[in-house]
Length: 261
Image 1 (cartoon, helix red, strand yellow):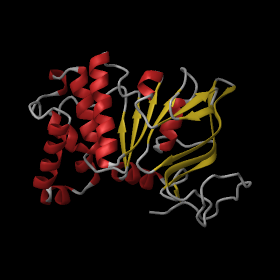
Image 2: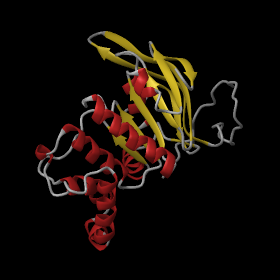
Image 3: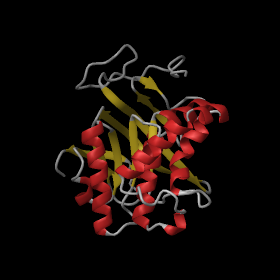
């Protein structure tokens, strides 16, 4: 996979608290955004959403991004996950630039290295819970490759469903699951390819308080036991307190970074 560094322009020097590699990225971090900017066009008017965001996420860290509606939280998460491209600035993952990768490389990166959880579960209605969890592996491999490893893949998916408390719902369709169960299935699906980074956009937004707390406990356990790096967007400071660190976005900029806000 191309790292996209060739031909890149040199940014003005910025103060850093961490050492840098030859490409200028901070050493030891999982993902880093530098001066990210993003606007959307509405009619003849450009509406700025991100106005120069700098963000470093350490490997194994659980980071929460909070802010009011319209502050740019979800936009930032989508840029980090290469679901969208910034208008300005750069993003690096494990020391390699990713914001300017070709589409096929971005697809491969998301399939192999990123797990994503959204407020809306996006389960395929015609597939069982187990088949939904297996879907990323089916997409990421050739038909023959998946067939050869089908027993191993099925075992991995079943283990993950047991982990999130859905061992008894593997053969159920999404319409037969509760909201909390669908979100648990979405978490298992996001983890089946053993990602290095989990991006979660309002993962408890459609859930009641009790179920939301259970989902957060699953994420916290994955972070601590599996050393999984998690970046979670939420509008609720109480939910954000479950993370190691909180970043607040205000009008498209990082306002505060602390551990207990």
